[in-house]
Length: 252
Image (cartoon, rainbow, N blue to C red; front, side, top):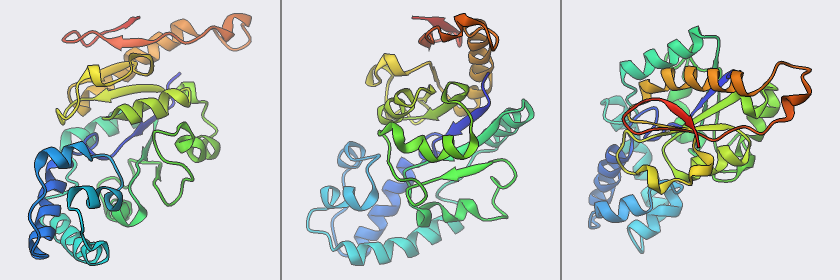
């Protein structure tokens, strides 16, 4: 039943907030401006960078910041300080592919912000079937239409997709699109109670746990949805949530 595992990038596939916090403060220091506080950075985390920066640093010259940020971004990536995907996360992607599932990325980043991950020599090459970002989709999360291009291009029904993300907006977008959603709590930025339970099928403490959870979800959906042609196939999907500490899914 689960044909596609769709993965958010920031604080899901790789831990990004702390690295971005250091990067942005490095640029602000270069501009002679005071650093942003961690609390302010966290409160605006998830917003597009240039929308968030005026809140993080009021009065900021966005044009100058953008130019300096791009250079600093390239340095941090080259130095292995940003967008580092742990080997265990790569193995989890490989296991999903070996199980016959397609892996996609869907992120609110722009193409410039994710271009290095699209390079032929990147570790994601050969693992990911497609990448959807702010410049090749018309809508942004939490709008459920953020998945329109992916669903149209692949032809995969939304109920056969799982989106893995770290934010309540990710859950809202996936649930609104009719997809399964798994919340990744590895960054410790958010807690289960931050999410609307209606849209969450399961929570995982670390990204590699997605392999087992998708297998369990696959079995649940196979049990719930009758074979093609069965008139009972119109039954509504259950909400499946992980019981903390058990790793199991239950109807709730």
